[in-house]
Length: 283
Image (cartoon, rainbow, N blue to C red; front, side):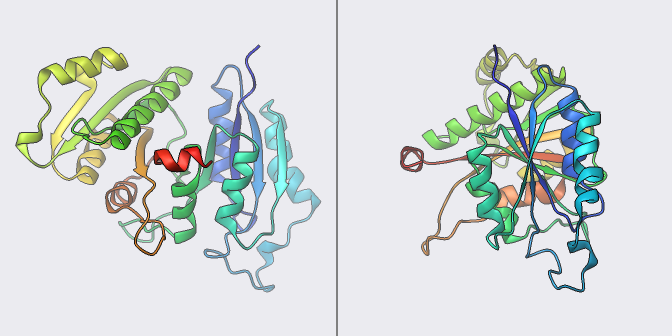
């Protein structure tokens, strides 16, 4: 018998609308077998007014029942609820998701205040340290999972980047398979000398099962190309990757390309993180 998978869902009690939980319920209903939910209730201190004058920080038993337990029960799903008051918000999410052996983390993000989406450092650290994919849930984004777009780099030369390509492709294929979605791949390039040859495209199509007319290779910056293709095919979910890299001070590098891609999209984005071989051994 297949072991039940777990979706790790972050709920901020300061929010009136719990978009990550809503999306998890919608997508879980479309899966067979259905996953269980691990609901993690915590306040993002970097994004929320934590002073006592904020009435939204006071939640009673009825709030947990009406906002979390009842919607999950109505959807016919099981759940485990954890309440966290750690000031190290991002580390607590990563640690608890690992304890639950979560398949994915559903992380709510707030609407853009301008065209450019900016990422708080706390959420960026969740992306860069999580051992499972993190799905950024956007308010107002489509709930469907009928068209999935995976961003890959055919020109990858290092082992780590090739592994990340494989991880993105496998995760996108998994999602598309579970929801009966149409899978597309996209690759951007700046130098015409880097355009992949037909043999490489044919090999990729054969390996992934994605027909060549759904493999989009376009010239331009990655963020612009991914945004354009996502709009063209009306994607519901974009799957992308980021490398777990550290700067000279030992701090995590944010990753300009990944940040730009996320910033220009209005749909949900799944981020797969690639760790180095050394980091994987010490996990």
